Length: 143
Image 1 (cartoon, rainbow, N blue to C red):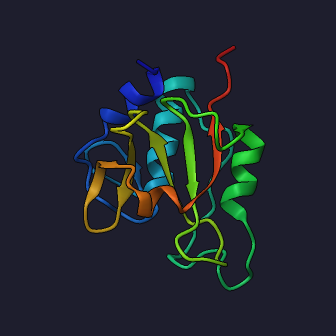
Image 2: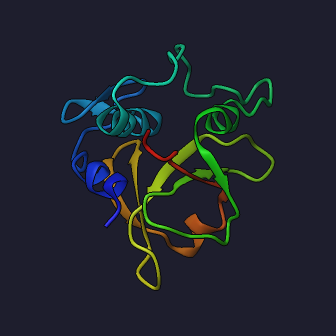
Image 3: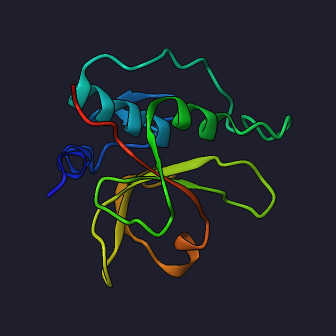
C-alpha cells in the first residue's frame, strides 16, 4: 500500500477547519495535503498565505493547480495509482478548489479528503466526484 495512503488514513476523523493543518485538531483539504507532506518529507515546500473560502474564484486564477505544478509530478488522468493527488473543479467553469488523495483503485475506488461539515473522510470515488477531477499528480520521489 502507498505510504501516502497510510499517512492520509491517519488523518481520518480530523474535524474540518478552514486553513488549518493539524492532525486530530482540524484541517481543510489543503491542510490535509500539507500535513501528509510534512509526515513524509518534513518541512513544507513553501509557506501558504491566508486564503478565503472563495479564494481564486473572483480572479479566476488557478492557484491550487499552479502550486501543485510547483511541487508535485503531473500525471495523465488515466494513470491511476493509490496516493495520487486529485484536483477537483466543483462547478463547471470555476477554478479548482478541492483536492483529495486516491485511496483505493478499481471498482471500489475511494479518495481521502477534508470536506466541510464532515472532516477528513474516505469517500467513494463515485461518478459525481470522478467527473469533477481535472488533474492528477504524484508525490515526488523521496531524495
